[in-house]
Length: 351
Ligand code: NAD
Image 1 (cartoon, protein in one colour):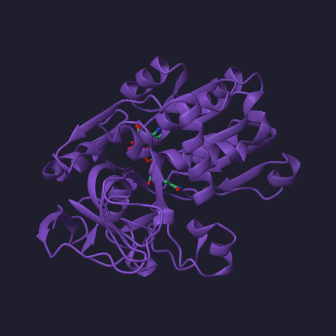
Image 2 (image 1 turned 30 degrees about the vertical axis):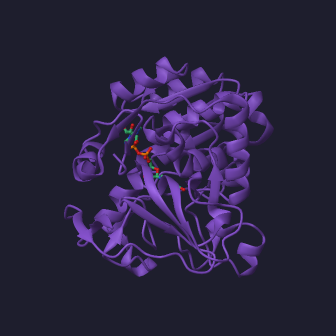
């Protein structure tokens, strides 16, 4: 099989060839049809998260080993199944839930594999979909996508379930109050589409790039330039006194600060983005403003099932999706890094 692997942090992915694995036990082998390109792959290939103040969290210290086949937003066709893999057969087209845990600890047994202390996420800790084949350890990670085109379904595996999980954390206020989404990229436009599908009241998208604001505007949101010196004032005016919920899909020092500055008493900031940085927060603000500052990391198997149910009822999220051949993976990552991608790029290894 062929894959494009991260062999050295900061360097382009390298074409590798190795024997195609044969599924054993409960494993399932898929031919990859669609593999989304997520900004997290840029952080992974950098090899670290920016902790602010010159500090870095190295991915190697989190257990990420090279060479690594990245790619965690995958749809594939089942080509072979292990003897103990039940419920799937060759020819089935499936979305792959990549947020695997050990499957055995109390957290995993509660259904929160994405929070397992020994994660095995596909495309992060084990081989992902920047390849022509992908081995999945158990059929429970595979989801039927019905008649949703593979390139539209693939992003559900990360940008979909991540923003669905973040939107759920807003709670019932989603239907009553406008929400603020910081970052109108792949996750941002997905979040906007899901917010609509979940009957959200109204959305305000903050981005520093006019092209992303234009896409968000087209999708029905109000937009604000994140670089405007009075961005917080504009958010407060647009939310009639301050935001009840801000989902920060950038997660940089400036965006988290903007979110905190824009909040009404009792409001909530949900940080998803991993651009990095740090903040100083006066501790009395937490009780005096009754605020919640919460992180959100991908989603659970239950949330993935709920998301696919939502897609079946309301249709696939309508965001711009561009396709590229697998061999163009380095160009795709380069374009994403340069901020040139509106919506999501999806690789098509089977073509
Ligand atoms: P993307 O590159 O498609 O979009 C990022 C967007 O943020 C762009 O539109 C860019 O213009 C905008 N932006 C950058 N700096 C900004 C600023 N200061 N103010 C306002 N907007 C700004 O990236 P993506 O794939 O949507 O991913 C976004 C982030 O979310 C990444 O850091 C990624 O690693 C992270 N992520 C987190 C999770 C999680 O579970 N927590 C899951 C997936 C992705």
